[in-house]
Length: 295
Length: 188
Image (cartoon, rainbow over all chains, first blue to last red):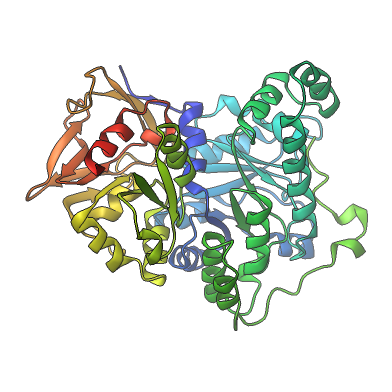
């Protein structure tokens, strides 16, 4: 038999290799090196971290391919990059330069306010954000091979990450107790493909790897998300907007590995310097929240 | 029999699921004392730089090397890199298998693939469907290490040295338990 590339198994498989790890936002090759040396299992290459996108406003687009390529040349770990929701040409460009994963991300300004990218059309795997199980399974239905709960990117406030992880994982727990004849009505209610609802019930978990994102700023935040039941953690602005990025990055990696060991968590939380300043999500005007982008 | 799976980072849960299906007691290994009472160890797929760095930080390198002198250890993908003597770049390695590996030898993720392999030592001789994710190849084997399987073009993807096993691919991502059963037969 010939070698088969781009199968759903190999797309999903790379996400499985990232489990128990930390994926860090980086904006320069130097950041990428710091992230790799701290033990990141992958990096997200972008021009501005979410906190800066928030602060500067304007339209946020795919990063310059040259910047992404420079980061790919600097590290041996997988490199992800973001395209706008529904912008399949940005995705084609990212696939052409050989990124390892594409994040169809609400952090960038959406290009389509009704449709997401048909991700089955690509050989490169995609990750997408979600706030609940229905949104997650719609994205998997379109071909996403990895999911992340959205949280509220660029805030340093973990409250939305917790809300979305609790929503998704709680809905899966309730689904596992439903009778089979209830699944079609449930699929209709949450707007998810029936077959994926059925598969999720049988597996007792999301059918693809599920990370947490959006607001993780400390080792304790990261361990909190792991104890809630996600497979790994994204840290965006939380590292390179803090006082000592290398030390904080390394501490968050250790916290994700030893997420149930409170004495190690205490040890790695010591003397990390200033955390990112952060924005309190509960005092943020609705219009400034980005988690609502995605349909 | 009790088998440990190194649970620093990677797809350790997938290995544990298969071991449990085979009726084996399992343990997650994150600190040196977790190795006590184990009959064998699997080092899963993941990122070898992450696994190496945290093994250094939590004092696991020497205990793992000692464990490997008397016990079976099997490394899949990142685990195989971690077992090797030489990964052609500077990163923490156990260095207990006489193999040289090349990381990401097939390219980037878009080049990850599935293929059927012939692995003569597996109980039944039918092809083994293998999954390669940003996989390393075993460039060469030295000393007592020997080749267990190659791709049709001759590139080495599985090797054994006494009780130590290294595979470029991921049996834990399939439903085929033959490789795990082979590993358990060595751990006995």
